Image 1: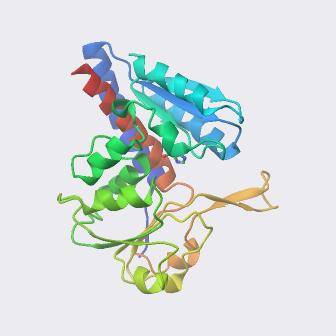
Image 2 (image 1 turned 120 degrees about the vertical axis):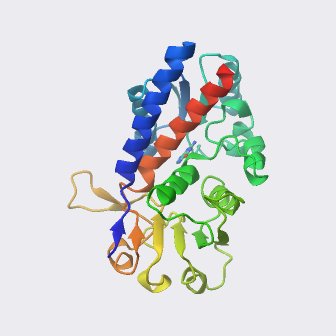
Amino acid sequence: MTRVIDGKAIAAEIRSELKVSVSSLTRKTGIVPGLAVLLVGDNPASQVYVRNKQKSASDIGMNPLDIKFDQDVDAKTIESTLHQLNQDESVHGILVQLPLPDHLDEKLIIRHINPMKDVDGLHPENVGLLLSGTPRFIPATPAGIHQLLIRTNNNPSGKHVVICGRSDIVGKPIAALLLQKDKASNATVTICHTGTKDIGEITRQADILIAAVGIPEIITPDMVSEGVVVIDVGINRILDPSKKSGYRLVGDVQYDDVSLKASAITPVPGGVGPMTIGMLLYNTLKSAKLNAQ
Ligand code: GUN
């Protein structure tokens, strides 16, 4: 029988564990973990994500700091704000919500975040630490996927994990994480991307399939084998006139048909999405603790 992996419930469990740890840190040291989130422009999806991050931080006793810029802000203005936040002792985590407008170079901007406060784990120093097997901040979505697997008894050790998508934010770091020589990772990892000749040939070999492509319902049932564990990272808006909002969210996986073959699968929404915020808060607490030492 297919098991639906309830990311919403597991994320709530993680947030309540974190709330206890935050309260203990604050009681012992007086430190209230501070999380600064920078949002550029008015991308509706990013606005929702940022609001949810701020609310969740506040709910577990952290101090959220909300910084908004107009769509046409220049890189120098963002960089000088990042330099101020780097110096601010009340801020332990800094995150620049992505994607940024086209005139801004994301990679260059991220380099201006102090790597000790880079709770997104996207600064080259943190990327290198993860790849070399001594992670400091694991990017939130990959860390969330890892927790989903572990907390549902789907330890990736010894399994063939196939990842569709090679983004800096999901595909590459989840590959690096699951490759680690560690009892909770230790997987054989294959990454498929736009240069892969026959993706279905590879995805059918997966014990665990991670879809992080950003194309609605591109993973079809003929691309998976019976018993596969499916992690769907996609959050795609598709038009749906029957909804009040005019759209609905679907993943990268054809959920109804693929779930008939899968032993376990994450829904969209309610799978990976809520975990991302939980792990961002985990990283922010870790940063505050590193700071306390
Ligand atoms: N946009 C979508 N997911 C993320 C994330 O994990 N971090 C940042 N900074 N932006 C995102």
